[in-house]
Amino acid sequence: MVSNFGEIIRLPVHPILMAGIMVVTTLYFLAPIFLRMWISDQNGNTLPPGPPVRYPFLRKYPELALDYWAKKYGPLFSIWMGSQLFIVISDPQIARDLLVAQGAVFSSRKQYFMKNQVILRGRAITASEYGDKWRQHRRLATQVLTPKAMQGFASIMEYESHIFIKSLYEEGQKGGHPINPAHYAGRFALNNMLIISFGMRTDSATDPLVEKALVLAMEFMDLTGPWANLVDFFEPLQWIPTSKRSRGRNLHEGLMDVYGSMIRRFEARMDSGEDVPDCLVKTLIQSQEEEKKLDWDDLCMLSAVFTLGGVHSTSGIIQWFLALIPSHPKIAAKAYEELDRVVGRERWPNTEDEPNLPYIRAIIKEASKNIIVQRVHAPFWMATPHCTSQGFTYKGNYIPKDTAVVLNCYTLHHNEKRYPDPFTFNPERYLGDDLSCAESAKLGNAMDRDHWTFGAGRRICPGLPAAERELWLAISRLLWAYTFHALPDEPISLEEYDGQSGRTPLPYRLRMVPRLDNLPIILQEADEVKISW
Ligand code: HEM
Image (tube, rainbow, N blue to C red; front, side, top):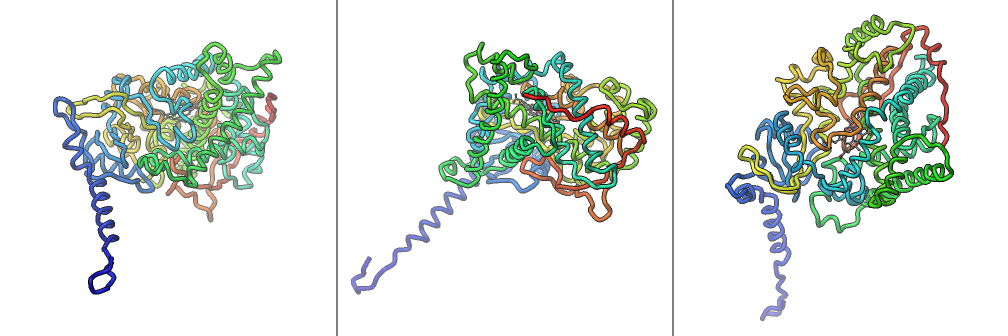
């Protein structure tokens, strides 16, 4: 604009715009103050208490923020992450009252942009909203994991644990050479999952398929941490192309490619009349013929998620166990005493020995409950969030439809009343608990449940029986076979964990020294074989 005096007048457009943006942004972030007053059910019950601001993201160890808020606002609090409302459950009874008793309301899944829309395209069981599609997927998944079906997989899992111990022995040069166990634990878990999903296994530690599948598994974990993606909570960001989004798309393509070609190979064997083993993909292909609703993308995503879900968590627990045990020699000594007394030194433990080895069972439960990283961080800090499919009022707290529901495992697992001295790795707390995790999850008194690592309610991990058996075979045999030693100049870091959803320790090496002279003789009893397919 030009003034009467010929001067150019600069309109303060920028400051006004800036001020406007700042006001809108401030209002946006402070909106929970008002929303907490306005959102209520017909009886005037408002949301569970919680912070008065929206959060764009949580810091690196979100479990600590949740624990802080649970102490401040109580065992049922609410929080906005961007535009998404969450409720956070930190008490066993509330977990039971909502996730189990009100399963029809609290069992859906939010269609998170990155995980469920870009990568899984809403297809796989873990991403499906509560409804017919999920029921169909869940039925197929549990069909593959019935106790009878598990019996069929038992000898294969025993074999895989044999190969796991053997490859550690060979690579570790009988204890002379330090090793990073990540690859071997990953391969053990992957082979178990490949057998359950595809009736096949890989026969080499450097098999390109293992490498590819493990890379995909790691990328999946990295991209799908529940609070890892800003784009999940700020919808406008979904329209902006980002490198992360490209990674998500590439991961989808990678999963379709790898798992699609594996399904095709399996299908070709079926078509040629071969007597193929019972496994998830066989069930899926047969069901596809019977139930037309299962399309190609369903098949690929279901088998991918099933396999991925089972690999990272199981190998993560084994890796944490191996990271922790060198600094707990008294616990190892008690385990050796029990193993020598009950199983003896002539053979190693089998599945049937489980009821007679309560201390080993207790170690596994304690390891699964909570690997205590430097007594602060907890890599398994929450189960996959659920989501409400309708509004519900619980003891005066209104929980609207589409609220994301977080099971706050960190706080649940550090409950002083349930786990005295909760920051200590103490298997003894589980002595006298003879139930499997699956049985324990069904206990009437939620306070008695062993731990919440496998989730709760209708979405509870369907792979639980398989995971328990794998952990048993791996950890009991590791303890029978080796003593564990950190390297003096390479302390094992228990301070941090890797990946957005925090499942694995930072890379480390340890020496695993054979405990008994007859280990090589036992290891000779089985050789690596490829189950061709
Ligand atoms: C130690 C190992 C494992 C851990 C800690 C684990 C943990 C979990 C958790 C926390 C959930 C979410 C539960 C919920 O929403 O309440 C889940 C879901 C799932 N898990 Fe596992 N899991 C493990 C092993 C496995 C294995 C071996 C399989 C397959 C054989 C498997 C298959 C699945 C599937 C398909 C779902 C999705 C269920 C649904 O949304 O209905 N998991 N798992």
